[in-house]
Amino acid sequence: MTGKPFTILGIETSCDETAAAVVRGTAPGPGEILSNIVFSQIEAHAPYGGVVPEIASRAHLEILDDIIQRALDEAKVPVGDLDGIAATAGPGLIGGVMVGLTTGKALALGAGKPLIAVNHLMGHALTARLTHGVAFPYLLLLVSGGHCQLLGVGGPNDFRLYGSTIDDAVGEAFDKTAKILGLPYPGGPAVEKAAKMGNSRAYDLPRPLLNRRDESRADFSFSGLKTAVRQLAQQEISVEDACASFQAAVIDILRDRTQIAMNLFRRDFPGASTFVVAGGVAANQAIGTALAGLCKEEGFVTRIPPPRLCTDNAAMIAWAGVEQLTDHAAGDALSVSPRARWPLATGSI
Ligand code: KG4
Ligand code: ZN
Image (cartoon, rainbow, N blue to C red):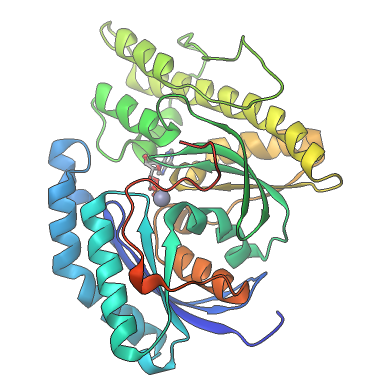
């Protein structure tokens, strides 16, 4: 670690997790997680089979102050000792983002500390530096409930898009598949669990775009796969086999697209060979194992943060704040507005 470490409070409210964390460190990491409180709203949304924005923003509002206090207490860091406050400013459900960003602004203003407005995707994208101190550049597969992208990461503010989904995000495909098959929300962990007991060759599901290989793009498509699962579910089927077959199709798609992106990444960054997977879907062990196998074949080193730092959390937001302070890139965030959409790289969704 070089330079004086920064101690940052992170706030995350962009979806259905109310989270606050205190992280200490300096780029390139690894950093020290002093506290990491995540309150999941799963129970509140489960009856609806997905996140209800109005319920989410009200729940954030009710609990965020307590979660922040717990994060500071557990870290034993008073507000006065912080070097800054980092809050997610988007992309996400606008009501929730507003709650977190406004709370961050109020705290920062009251304590006379800098506020860092963080892109949630940047939080996911830089987590492997917090956990493993991964050096730039690296190839990143960002797979969450709202995003599915392959990016070359050249620096904390240098993201090059090699491909993204043209329809559903991969986490969304997991969630919808779970719903179709009668499994609980959120779908990812439920599908992964059921898949462990199923036969991945039981049903022949489509691998959209795989037969149209264009070496200059690594785009994804998952809606055809979802439709195929819906059709399959109209017959008498084994849910375990359906989950295993679905997950196998996802793995084939992710492997194929990652392989194309590896070539694009090598062109941009000759000699570089680190591959990072981030976002909620990176918590899936079968996907991680399959991608690690591809990396071995291609001469890449794989780095995947532990599951609780793959799914939404505030430690990654605090770490993004550390990166911005180290990079002297934190602007006057008190005037920043919450954003529902905020692409990491130009040309992305
Ligand atoms: O990053 P994240 O926590 O929130 C977003 O920013 O979207 O990702 C949530 C997504 C959900 O779609 C969830 O089903 C999926 O990640 N997910 C998984 C697993 N754990 C979470 N997908 C597949 N396998 C898992 N084990
Ligand atoms: Zn996320």
